[in-house]
Image (cartoon, rainbow, N blue to C red):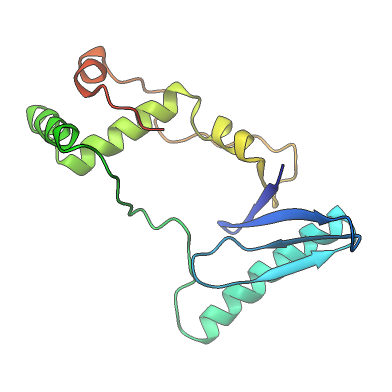
Amino acid sequence: MMSTMIYKSIEGTCEVSVDDGVLFGKLILKGDLITYEAKTPAGLKREFRAAVDDYLEHCKAKNREPDRPFKGLFNIRIAPEEHEWAVRCAKAQRKTLNAFVRKAIKAHCALHEGTALINQAAGRWDASLGQNAPRPSMPGSRTIIGTDLAAAVKMELA
């Protein structure tokens, strides 16, 4: 299982090359490729942090925004009937479709213990806090949507 680390909101992988006897990884970015390697886990953590710091300094020197894998925009593909259903439910609640979908995603994640479970499943941890750091919870992750919305939506967000 591949693990990841997070530092300054940038995630990086942690992998092993048995043949080469090294640990290595790369920053998880959409367009840029930044890699690092070391002989020990502590060394990999150090090299990961150095790679993030170097990358952020490079972006600043080039006067450009760092590449981020999660920008808050994504497309989903659903059946036209589901699209219509979601729009009608949103209108009935006097919400935009975006607000409706955001609430549905937060509610679904809350039912599955928010980011703690997601981070655990992905093997992620925050490199600045250490392996046993408490997992952050999503704002509103304890808020469970009412049964009227859950019954109306009936859409799975997996």
